[in-house]
Length: 119
Image (tube, rainbow, N blue to C red):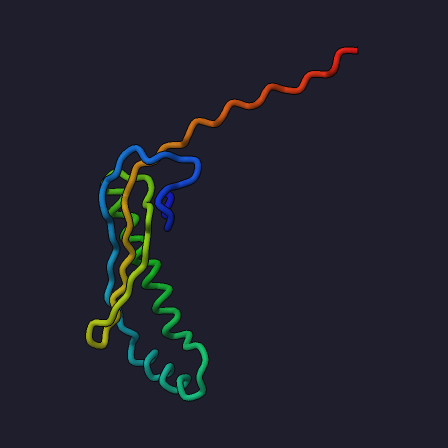
């Protein structure tokens, strides 16, 4: 299945629009991650505990969006976007886009083979 941020898929045409699909999760870091990240914050730099939570959350919401698109009979999602926000001490992650059915464009006819010049 194609999942693209563009409004179309090069080399394919959209034949059916199945509607908006999304995947959603609400997460928080565990107490160990918060404790470790708190110490890392003193010195600055990346906090891999939080980076891991975000990567896992994005993968989860992409999979949920993809599953919803498949349930609707789509074989692609176009105009995919991520969104996130805070709800109290929790973070919400969302992936959304438009589920579509695409089919390949017909390949253009190959140009005729060059012929040898007459002698």
